[in-house]
Amino acid sequence: MTAIPTDLKAPRREPGKARVLLGYLVHDKLALLSAIYLLILLAAAIFGPMLIGDMSTKLGLRQRNLAPFTLDQGWAYVLGADTLGRSILARLVVGAQNTLGIAAAAVVTSMFIGGTLGLIAGYSNRWYSHVILRLADVVMSFPSLLLALIVLYTLGPSIPNLIVVLAITRVPIYLRTTRAEVLELRERMFVSAAKAMGAGSLRIVLRHIAPLVMPTLITIAAIDFASVILAESALSFLGLGIQPPQFTWGAMVATGRGYLANAWWVAFWPGLAILLTTLSLNLLSSWARTVADPQQRWRLQTLRRAPR
Amino acid sequence: MFGYLGKRSLHSVISVLGLLVLVFFLTRLTGDPSYLFLPLDATPQAREAFSKLHGFDQPIYIQFFNYLGDLLHLDFGESLRQNRSAMAVALEAFPQTLKLAVVAITLACTLALVVGSLAASRPGSLFDRFASLVSLAGASAPDFWVAIVGILVFAVSLGILPTSGTGTAAHWIMPIAVLMLRPFGLLVQVVRGTMIGALASPYVKTARAKGVRRQQIIFSHALRNSLLPVVTVAGDLATSLVNGAVVVESIFGWPGIGKLMIDAIIQRDFAVVQSTVLVTASAIFILNIAIDLLYAILDPRIRYQTT
Image (cartoon, rainbow over all chains, first blue to last red; front, side, top):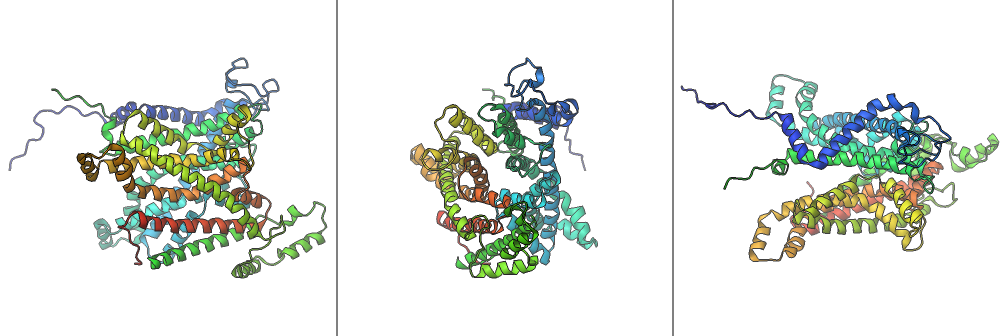
């Protein structure tokens, strides 16, 4: 036997994976902008309330309905002030924490519940699997906003209830995807092998199947995040979401709605913040799809011209 | 085919019934309507009489069986607020929403087909990039905010469109524009994606080799084959269109089923909530069946069977 020489010439070191991804990101200017915006937003949501949280509740008679783009009253009032003279910039930052926090909690909750139910419905064929599927049908067949309105009015609007309601309306998506994957996975050889080794159902599902479903679920969660933000802000806008003194961007638009004629900026900025956030998330996820697709990836690569 | 439809209908009827049970118990948990409908200083006797009149003094499971019994002979209860049949109230509001939704989804589909096809015919061109960005923005914009900005610009500043209400054709413009925004954005992306696939397929190459004009290839050869995914997405969008209708109707004061639903929930008008749920769910169920049939027409390869 002779060893087959594979690396006669020391090959040029391939750039690291993170570096390649960064290269793709720089190539797509819109995706790069989105990533930068989302990073700034994340930093503002985490650290902002500690730094300028007080300013968001500080009333100022002199700054009442202050128009935006003036620096006379300090940088905090660059986006203007609301009818009580509170800095809109500071309120946007505090609202960012609530908006993103609620959406993240709802996404994680629905991913967990949907994933668990999907594992059960996919792996077992007992009566409760059918019940789970029918329940998902019930939730799917009805407009989510109306369902959320009814449930929230019943339970009373509070942050935990808001998270639960948003999670319930998204559960069917995770449930169906997980179930479809499990249906396929459970016929694979490694599951039969584990069964032959004497593994119980619980062990097979948790140790062998669940880790393989996880990446799909996380991908869906990333895409779903934007729609959860939209759903939460619509609920808060209609007045059945978050309640004062707490607020999110959606609730800020709702308060600004009453002052449209004389202080448009109160409603405008928070809505723009929602739009920019969801748009950035969607742009980034469409970029990620392009990177993941071998037939599309070339669009993001710097192609060297072939020598003539 | 009919076996398939029968099975499908059975599933949907079970879903609708499940929804009605859910809504029945949920609304009963919201509290005693007598506190909202009688004056604050009403005597306990008056409250009791009110509860007795509307059957709220019964245990909840008896109320539920009464409700089911009434449903069987198509009695959907009385609206507490308007003192007439709840179903009549719901059916009066429903056409308003339907008109809005039909116009919005038709416009969204037509525009999305044209824009998506043109974008797909030259991928990577300036028009394509612009269309992609606009459609993404449309799909991710909060509709209530777009409505408010629309009011601000067209009603408050320019004064060319009315802020809310119904009546003239001008009242239709803003609600429809806001309502079709998200469907349009999502559909453009779907059309563009499937069209790029279709334009790369062998039959398009054949058509091109024969010398068929570009427009004809795009709009009559490739488009027909990429209609199927569009119909799927358009069907899914129908339920979310009702979500949009709730927001749009409450902002523009459109007397449709979404506004009725919000008002009824807040006023604890149980019978109206249940009737609107029933009407909405049935409409969505009929739509889903219509889409299944449309599949069979669009793609002759699809034949439904009961398995």
